[in-house]
Every structure is written in C-alpha cells, then in structure tokens.
Image: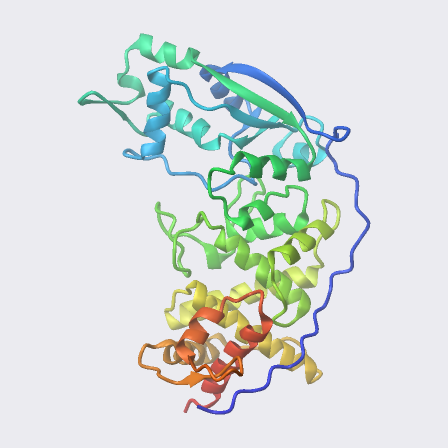
Length: 401
C-alpha cells in the first residue's frame, strides 16, 4: 500500500446569508389558525376530482402502491365499511399563498399534511384498484351491495384545517408524526418555499406538479420503482435520494469535502427562499456530477450503493479541491477509464480478503482499511474521513497497471 496523501486544510465556502424575506402565505399573527369540520367520504372524492384538495403535494412522503394484499390499504377501507372510523385528516389551507397558487393552480384550497395515504386508499378502492376480504369472500368496489357503497360514501370523517406559515407547517408535520418514525431529511425537505428544495426534488423524482422528470441517475425501471443505477427502492422511506442531492449541492458550493450536516442543509435551504435560486453554475455542476455517476454506472455495469456512491463523491470532491489548490478548475473525468479504475480500487479495498490496517486516530488502534473505505465513505459530516477514503482510493488507482 502506497503512502496516503496528507489531507489538505479545509476551506469551507460559506453561502452569504441574506435578509429574511416575507413569507408568501397570509401569515397568522403568532400562531397557526385552526378550524374543524366533518366531511363525508363523497366530499373528499369530489374535492380531489374538482382540484380543490391535493392529496399528493410535493412535500408529502412517498405513497404506498395501490395493490391487492396491502394491509394498510385494506385496513383503511374495512375501518370505513365496518364504521370503526379513521383518524382525522389534517389539511393546510393555501388559499392565501401566492406560491402555492402558482405551483398547484388557483382552484386548489387545501394540501394534505397528514392523511395522504388514507385519501389515496379510498380513491384507489373506488377506482377498483384492489379488493378487501370480508369473511371468506373478496369484494372490490363494484361487487359491494349498493347500500354498502352508499354508507361508505356517506361516512363522515373529522377534518382539521390549518392556515399557517411554512415553518409552522414543518413543526405541525413533525408533531403529527411523533409516534411514526420520520427520517430527518424528510422533515428538512418539508420547506415548500425554498428553491433549493424544489431543485433537489426535481432531481430525485418525477413530478407532475413541477412538470419535470427526475435526473436519469434516479430513473426507475418498473412498477416496483427500482432505480436503474442505484441500489434500493426509489422513492424510499429514508429519503436517501434527497439527502444525496443535498450533500452534492453543499459540496459543489464548497468545491471540496466540506461538512454536510443536517444543520448545514437547513441553513442552505433557509438562505434560498422562494425568490432566490441557487446560482446557475451550482445547479449545472450538481447535474454534471450526477451525469458522471450515471455514465460510470453504465460503463462499468455497477449499481451504486450508499457506500460506493459516498466513496465516489469523496474522490471527486477531493480531486476538485486538489485541482483548485493547484490553480485549476473542477476535475475533468473520463467516465470509462476513471470509472473502471475507481470500481476496481473500491472493490479491492472493500473486499473481505483485504487485511491491510491503519492507525487513523493515532492511538495505536489498527483498523481494517476495508471497513474505513466502506463505512466512512458516507461520513458526510466528517470531511477528514471523507478525504482519507478518497486518498486511499486515489492511491490505489494510481498504482494500477
């Protein structure tokens, strides 16, 4: 194993703070404004059809598929049929929000904050997308007695409607989900005003609302929503794709393996509100990097995992830092040659047969290099470890024949 290059001092490029802008919502003095109503199931379906209620807003979690055998879907429907009730719907009143009126259309008055799954299950069932089992028989919507269908449509549900600011919306969402594990990045991406959030969303998923398709790196191939070039399911519950996009954006701004913490992501999102976009050069460089990852995946036939993606971006931004310190610009990389060397180095260093060790903390403890490369490749909050991983891989790449 060749000598490991010494990590260069970190030069974090800070985004210049701007003055807080006026929220586009008709904000309430101090606190959210609530009202409570009773809606029939038929009211919900009509409001969705009439584009008054949006049950799939951009800041919602990924929806469960409409399929037979999904316990959550059938549980919701049977609770209504058996008149056991379902929990209240929580909606956000957006009638006074210019931002939301522009995004969704002026006909929309409400966005689902909590209850999207319940609303989707109801609509899917009425559309005949799945059946429920009552006794030993299976029933879809059309097979139910007319009286049962009418009772279903007339069933009343409690609806809590709130008029609030964007920050309050995130706080309400977090409070509503205290008993349900919600990934921290899902909460970070709740900000519906930030142009950074919109930029990342457009990269990671297809959106009818934004009239945009996801970046090809995150493209999915089949009805199970499996991505072409990344391992795991997309969109996934942990919001990894959004996290990847935020990390890359933070590193593009810094042009090195900077600290990419949740707090830093929140600051970035807050600094860019509804009227201030990320500079075009930043957006272009983020997309260029994702293009490179996609092309490497194609040329090497490698599906990127969290670890190999983390290692790749650690190498790339380490190279960018080195180029910049030498007076140059971002690295120019051939996806075929560079990609093959990277995958070979990453695979060799993380293979179980690699018994090489290092004392990375200076306390005499020897740690296997395979664990360092595999685990610290996504230590996004620790640039020193990111640079160590990058240097190990670059050293191996330089020694390849």
